[in-house]
Image (cartoon, rainbow, N blue to C red; front, side, top):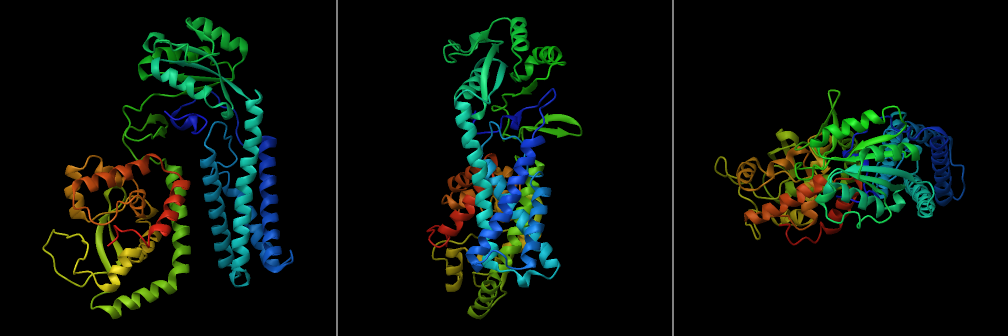
Length: 485
């Protein structure tokens, strides 16, 4: 179970009572004001670096104004102004990066629609994006660094009363104690089954433990604790209902933290299903808002990539056409999200040849079918570039499990555990398995099993930061991977 200083405790919880307002009031307004200053200041600093004077043109000022407006409109959608108490700072940094890239993309599209992009310096735009993006992240990290010091000093803490059972209760309290910078402090514990974990009290020094639920409830109310966490199995429904009923008139956040690790394939957490809370046991591991963010990033990234790579794409297409007979593009049917079939695009790297129906022979090392140019394209992954068109069409993602030929899907689905779950999200141009050495021919079931295990790890641990790490690793290793042939 993750430490609550490193993960969002509400990922798999459900607050039964009123929650405190987050991201509103003076702190939220101050954060927005700081962001506006950073955007304007970043643009000015970029102009100073690029042009050696601050004022460049009215059009650049309009661009800054558009970006500022999009920031105020879109940052709340990405949860930037919510409270991040006890949540991962790496996730916060990735959310800010994603939100800022989307803001700049939207502002750029708006300037393009107004036919004003010809007057914008690309170098100034790059400087501005980098400086402001760094400033937005550093400002948050600095704020949280100050808050960590304050919380280590015993200030700005939210007292948590925990009602749990056995090992799960022990884990929750231990994570709170081990994460003082998260802003939570274990203030009282009631274990409905204390004998399940021997000497559990000794493992939680300084945390008052109660044997009587009535006394526990009285203590929590008298002390005015702000948080009540229920680390209980679903079989303890009666206890949960009693606590909810007891505190229905108190301003206390009651959060349910179920132990579903032994049941759920993915840590999907709590969702709202036609107005009813539900826990995903085997479903898409990414919630709808995460999928929407990922798709928005994919479309923006694909547009920028295709625009930047157009000369290279034309050069490769001409080289393929001249070097051997046959079409420029190789097309093949593959499975996408939820098993939907689509046609994938790649630069052709093999000589034209015939295969029996229902048979797809994988490329092997020193495969005679691969052309000289094709060998170079496959080794450098340049043959995959046309798949940005698939990304733009919404059939693929920049990062995700690599799709396989339909014939291989039918084979491996029967022999590799968890294979089908790779298709719970869109397949990607690159993926976690590929940057960890699982590329090329899968001539043994063990190789495919390793690839699937890495794909499932990616699904369980997806974040924007992980996507950026995979993209960076793909660029760095694409020209030197010995498994690419």
